Structures are given as structure tokens and as C-alpha cells.
Length: 124
Picture 1 (cartoon, rainbow, N blue to C red):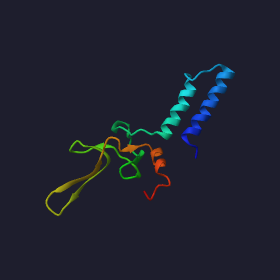
Picture 2: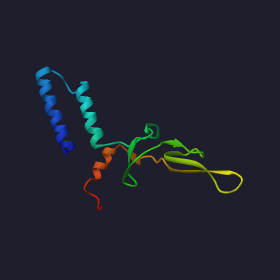
Picture 3: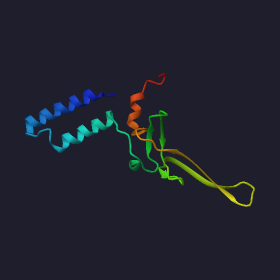
Picture 4: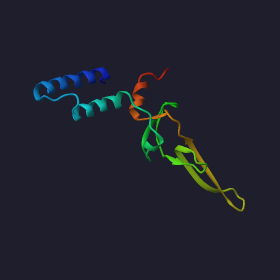
């Protein structure tokens, strides 16, 4: 896999060529788009709760696992990345409600590319 430095070097070489050939500078939208892709790939930023979507795959940097999230607000108003609830009958005269969830934490849930940082480091 290419390193961040190799990608930036290739981008800068293309930029130099484009600038020389077409008089395009680094302020152009194509340069900025490719630079942003490199940045997002090698330096992923954590998600905010609002950025999470149902069935979206995320990296949990605390547990070091990938999972499909199901963001919801629990009955006690907690922001949850996984959520499951159901009613059940306990043999009494009424049904009971049960919910299980994992609460959202800042700086914990990332794009899957964050998992690449741990590739080959399973023993650590």
C-alpha cells in the first residue's frame, strides 16, 4: 500500500506538471479534492453523532473492531451507536420493555480507514 508521503509526492508532481503545462495552481479544485482524499485516508477524523447513519460501518477505536452502527436516542435520552429494544412477557400480567445499547463517545468512532493504522499490529 502506498504511504501518505508517496501519495503527496505524486500529487505534487502532477501539480507541477499541470502548472507548467496548463498554468494551473494549487488553489484549483482538483488539487484540493485529491489532497482532501489523501488527508481523509491517512488522517481520518472521528465521527460526530450527527454524521452516523443506520447500517454505516464504523471503526471503534476503543474496542479495536469494525461494526455496523444503528444510531438512535435511547429512552433515557442517551446517544447510542448501537441500539436494540424489545417487549417480553415475564409470565406476569404485563409485558416488560428491555433495551440494550452502546453509548456514543466523542473521539471513539472513525471511518474504516482508521483500522489500517493497526494492520500488522495484532500483538500490541
